[in-house]
Image (cartoon, rainbow, N blue to C red; front, side):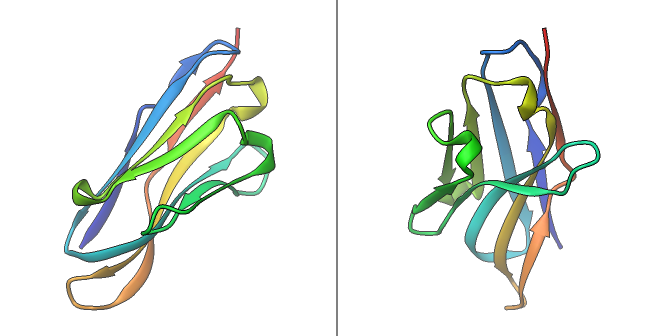
Length: 120
């Protein structure tokens, strides 16, 4: 089995920073893309940032210049550094990984989500 566990969410004031972590564990053979998505109340889940196995990154326009995605491949971990947070960044943030498990099946896995609230 494969698990993705996010951490690092919380309450922060506008302009503040948070760093989210996502650790993938279990029967993993290889991880391709990893990404961060978010879902605000009453809205659809949207891509925030993604990173490929070779380190190529892409960002939603709304977070460019403020958020940075990175990964530590040997640790099967992805990070999202969020600076200059705004109230509109408030959402549940989900980690996502496209990977091959040890039985050589390729699937997309999701974490349980971590709440980020930006408020004064």
